[in-house]
Image 1 (cartoon, rainbow over the protein chains, first blue to last red):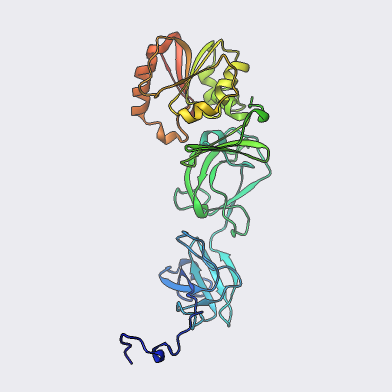
Image 2: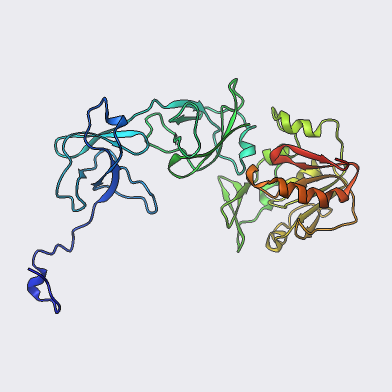
Length: 188
Length: 175
């Protein structure tokens, strides 16, 4: 029945003032494990986790419930869904994310212990026991993601870092932006 | 050489802030660029760093006594020039009066001049002119290098040189 002004008390029947919209994220359709990593990320789903203010991407984390609608009334069916940053989520029979798996093998490299104010400084620092994990063996600017852990769940911090410094391998200076995206990569 | 931490005060201003993180002073400008009080800053700019062959090469067989530094920052470069390189003349140009007012802990013989790098003029002559105006190499455009070199070559002694440390480039008076 259409609602007309002035509103009547009966117009508010069924209104849930506590209803909170879910967080949107981009994903693929449900796919099997052999094809999920190549599936197009062309769907918008929703999760009940938190969003990062200003973040363009709000991937779910393990434990979130995922839905096909923003109201959270329809849970995703069990299976595998590709998500951004070359990962896929595994969803169980009650719509809960039970695992997040990398689609690519992360490449491990030694990195400076701290970041530096200017890229040039990052080149000539002492080697450290710190490690970075990259989604490409030959990083591509604005595409490769840098993680600070081997499982690829924590992005490398923003700033200028030295990679392979003082090792026998070629040395590089790397700039990391938000969400671990490498925004500059060049030889020392 | 870094600056004695006890000399650097915490500060909150219009164009920059200074605060200590794990006991190390960090100057953060309003655009997010920052400088920390660490040893490597002076070592890198003066080619004293280990394994930095490109910048080492710029200083090979080159001696200097009178130096002009363009860009003040925390004062790490003039401090290094005075106390490690033992330069008899250390002049610094910066266009930020708030920064110049804040840096009150350098040796009295270091002369800080408020001026714009692109319009500065002097009759003084220097053996070495170092530019510390940028954070990223890509910001040091060829045009900026050419414009600045044209001005600052006039301030060089006969064997003097201009150095752009971030891009490992030097320019002699006669080239």
